[in-house]
Amino acid sequence: MFDRFGRQVTSLRLSVTDRCDLRCFYCMTESVTFTSRRELCSLEELDRICGVLIQLGVCKIRLTGGEPFVRNGFMKLVRLLSRHLGEGGLEELTMTTNGIRLSQHAVELLEIGVRRVNVSVDSLRPDLFLAITRHGRLARVLDGITAAARAGLRIRINTVVLAGLNEDELIELVLWSGDHGYDICFIEVMPLGSSGRYYMPISRVQTKLAQRFTLTESDYRSSGPARYVNCVETGQRIGFIAPMSSAFCESCDRIRLTCAGILFPCLGQEHSVDLRVPMLLSKENTLLVTAIAEALRQKSRGHSFAHNHVANKYGLTRRMSVTGG
Ligand code: SAM
Ligand code: SF4
Image 1: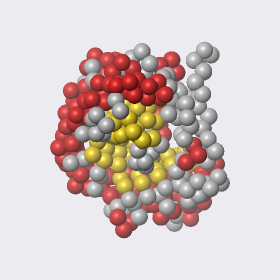
Image 2 (image 1 turned 30 degrees about the horizontal axis):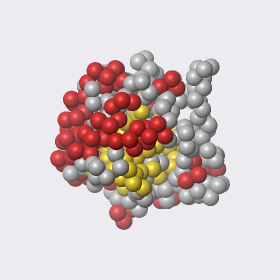
Image 3 (image 1 turned 180 degrees about the vertical axis):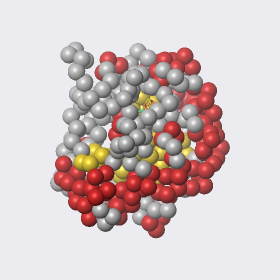
Image 4 (image 1 turned 135 degrees about the horizontal axis):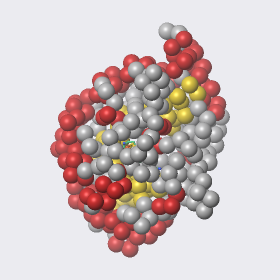
């Protein structure tokens, strides 16, 4: 699958639900309205769409949300998708989670064929963690991470960098994750319905880290947009995702599917194509393939995020939990 700018699309982010057991302030409001059950694709429907996308060339799927584990039957979906691993054309099945329910499922994930998980930890201070997530108990997340590591899953910690909130914890986060053998990735906050007032450019993070650690170039690439360096002192990889200050659109290989079967060719644009209706209209996949081709035609050259906190205008009204981070 190629878009009209010649970029090959090989990676799918599947938001299995837009619901979550936390309410990170940059991601959701307290009283967010979720996709209704009527609009929701069943697990089998999501699996069918993924199967078609895999046939068309998607070889990496990251399950995300909302919080994937709050979707009923989530592990059944992971199992269904795992049959494509290997000869089925799927090279990698991974997930991003807030870690709250990870400990219950870690062993099963590994058995099914998941090898890596990303877990979000914005702070190691229980009170700040609670304030950012509005409901989160840090200890549960840390237990989940420990269980996942013990089960044999490779861990990457995702930290959204928030000016004035966790910016003085960055060194501590690197030391803690390095100590445990986890990679860590720092992410610029994106204006997906959230205030840009905590925005901090990744260059500032890099400057802070370089004052304390020896960082060397790494040519490692994960399936996402992170750029990595090696940290000599801790031996871990540190990733940076800087959608705001240095767009990575030129090498974008991703599309995003929501739990309602809406395909977004770009996280940072509003246009989308409904795959649910063409899927339900026919048992054959011809209409579905046509709709996917239409979405690819719509994939734009780049995102249109822009922080404009003076006017308090946000780049987009759609939140990250809809299309999945
Ligand atoms: N619930 C899971 C979690 O928190 O890891 C998966 C979904 S969450 C939307 C995926 C990632 O997106 C998380 O690392 C989260 O911190 C990040 N995220 C959410 N809203 C964001 C925003 N406005 N800007 C940057 N990252 C954001
Ligand atoms: Fe939930 Fe993840 Fe969004 Fe936080 S970032 S509210 S954990 S979906």
